[in-house]
Length: 252
Image (cartoon, rainbow, N blue to C red):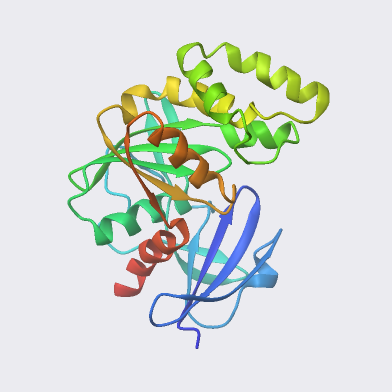
């Protein structure tokens, strides 16, 4: 039986997740617009909406007081605002903030990095229950834009190592992909370049790699890449974290 519904927008796609009293997702629907998905009953919104003011980092992922409300189809819904970093300029989307909040709800003392492995990945430095700083990469989106599947080919490890030591080699591997539409090195190349760019974020830090519906299967590949470098990385369930974070609105 549905207890409440999470209405979520990510990468231009809306999803309505029917959640039971145990926090399990019992049903879901998706579409390009929220209105056909809006059910009766309690709904919590995780999407950019007019009137929602983004809070500035560093801060906790959830508002300290009552959540603001946003209107969809003349209904005022509890809504989670996004976050913003000013230097360098970066945004944390409402679903990303919810996932981080969900992790902290179960691991309040977590001090390290949460890596949300979506079409664009978010690296978030977490300390004392706050998001201290973030950076964003676009490895999975880059592969998708070139028509490449999100999988680790036979030459994944070699390409990863090459791009980590010399990130400019990624362009060579993506050139082959663009020409033929196939490459056993593409995923390793883009992740190697990403890990080279984010080295200060993961080197010597505990990292939690969270899955995302915007890039199915990508979190497992990301975990493999970091493990190959001897990093402390754990794989987490991004959907469970999303629901755990949004469930905090039910306590108000």
